[in-house]
Amino acid sequence: MYGSKSKLKVTLLGTGTSHGVPMIGCDCAVCRSSDVEDRRTRASIAVESATTVLLVDTSPELRLQCVENGITHIDGVLYTHAHADHIVGLDDLRRFNWLCGGAVHCYAAKEAMEIIRNMFAYAFEERPDYPSSKPELVLNEIGADSLVIGDIAITPIPLLHGDLPVLGFRFGGMAYCTDCSYIPERSMSLLSGLDLLILDGLRRRPHPTHFNLDQAVAVARKLGARRTLFTHIAHELGHFVTNAALPEGMALAHDGQVVVVEC
Image (cartoon, rainbow, N blue to C red; front, side, top):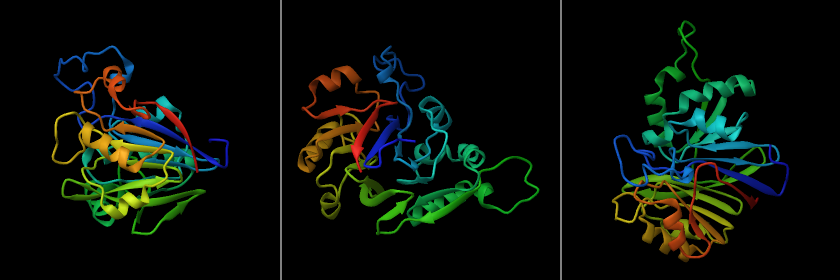
């Protein structure tokens, strides 16, 4: 685990949109790129303190992301929302039951929690005769109030993903706001004074449920974080070319990127 009691280590496990990059059946320049930073698994992060490791979302590539980034222990999983690219890796949490010696606590808003419970009903049914391994999970509802898991304090940030209410999360001087197209004014106030903002920045063209890159840059300027990384990135944005044109202090994130921030 990360050694400093006053800092958090943030690992961007995945930075891609719901299709991932490269996309199936696409021969565009980014999908054919040899630059490893153009290869994007689905969006997720790990947040690590001196004693606690949290995941945000369980992407379809969760197993590969954890293996690649040396994630061998978790103390909880926070869910931003219940779209497939953010939850379908949930079954891989069963490995952490063995590694951590108990149930994994998962935290989500009520609506997302109900979708997760329905989609993975087998994981929540009492079936002693179930013929295969299944994850042992405890679902916890996130309300409006801040919460503490281990030694990490978390502030839920209400966002809109099109018309869908979703959550971002603030951890000390860092906030993670993937999958959003609008940040309510009250939530803007919860995002002041950031060292690091990780923000949805899908592509250059407009999209009905995501910030495009111009919109994301405008929001980042308004919030004034010291550093901004854009995530949930589609195949229209090549890493090197796009970063060369972004304002100072802003960049596309990439899979495996590690940033250290103040608690």
